[in-house]
Image 1 (cartoon, one colour):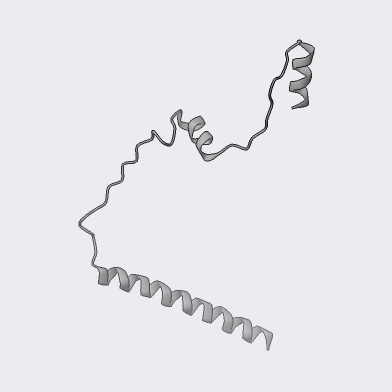
Image 2 (cartoon, rainbow, N blue to C red):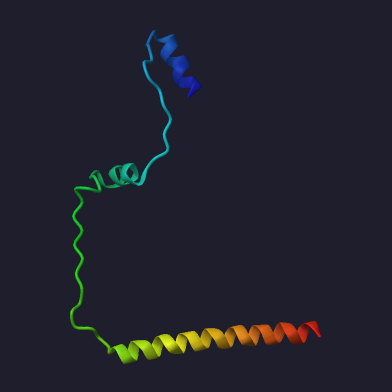
Amino acid sequence: MPRLVASAESNNVEILDLAVAEPTLETVFINSTGKSCATHEHHTTFDVNPTRSVFDASRTAMGALILRDLVVVWKTKREFVLRT
């Protein structure tokens, strides 16, 4: 910023207003795409025919939770044994 002001002064250019601002997501998006977020159209499609049942999805989620809990128990047991 000081170099900009010095350059303006040396070229007899009057600076009327000068500010520093952090970029927003909007300005980053405009610089990346050349378009405003407000004018950017979002096309989202949803599959109305799921590939698996709610039961299958619930079973998968439950299996993941049980596996996570077993890993936590195993790590805790290993740390307990190492400390004793």
